[in-house]
Amino acid sequence: MRRILLADPDPVSRDYLLCLLEIFGPCRAESGAQAAMEAFCDALAQGEPFSVVLVSRDLDLADGLPLARALDQTRRRDGPGPERSRLLLVVDPAETRRRSGLMESLGVDAVLEKPVTRRQIMDTLSLLGVAG
Image (cartoon, rainbow, N blue to C red; front, side, top):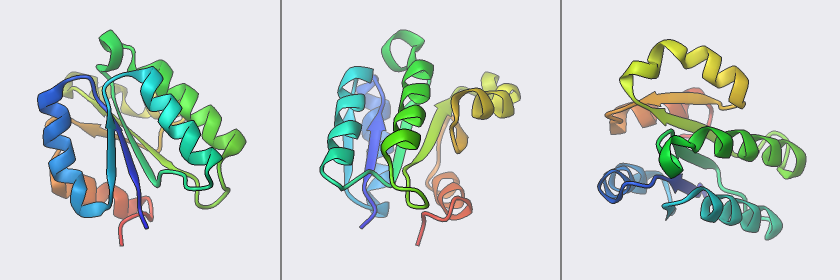
């Protein structure tokens, strides 16, 4: 079963994204980087890793980037090989031009531009081999 972790500090954005994501599987939402990292590590330790992790660039006063980097390092070190979590970064449209640089430097699998749509999520998960 596909499990999803969402890390977004804004309650309105978080609720909106949860509505979009719930059709893809059970979702857990966290508002801070520390709580998201703990949830991610706990899931790995229990042998039930998240299939998808969405991280908002705005997390913890625009500090979602270090969380994305830490999640990537953890999944590479501890996660299952071909079934490791897919890491998606949600950014503002102004950051779209930095998309490839963000993906390389942070180890994210995809960058989603706000406002995120269900179609955008579906297409991205399909490209990553997670949608089904």
